Length: 187
View 1 (cartoon, one colour):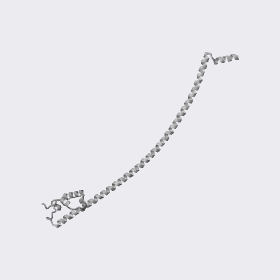
View 2 (cartoon, rainbow, N blue to C red):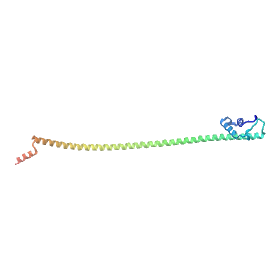
View 3 (cartoon, helix red, strand yellow):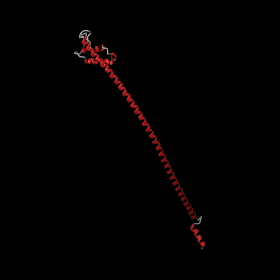
View 4 (cartoon, rainbow, N blue to C red):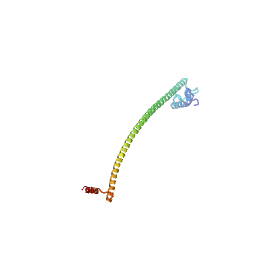
């Protein structure tokens, strides 16, 4: 009949206070009322003055007010959930900042340890190089001394060869000739 309202009309006509401005909440209210509405339900009818008695209208009004308080509870829960989410997010951010500071400290410690290790390696390499240079210098000096002795020996042998050649040519008397002349003279 023309004097009946649908559940959607009832929800849109009923003032939910601060919730009436929220399109999401009014949509939820519409969906809740529409889902609970059946032909036998009290939400299936609300007339414009004709139909059921005043007691039924009051009963319907109390149900709608109960629905409004449910939306207020829903809004409070949404606010609490939002606050909890923000607190969790702030806590996570604090944990991240603390983790980053610990990581930064560890990186600094690692950098200092690496600098110390690099300094120790540099000093160790310097000592090894000094030892190697000293060993090489000592080896080279020993070889030069040996070479000097070899050269002196070679010079002695060369002078002996030269004397031998000169004796062979007769330019200088040979040792045998000198000894023979000394024996003749002594005799």
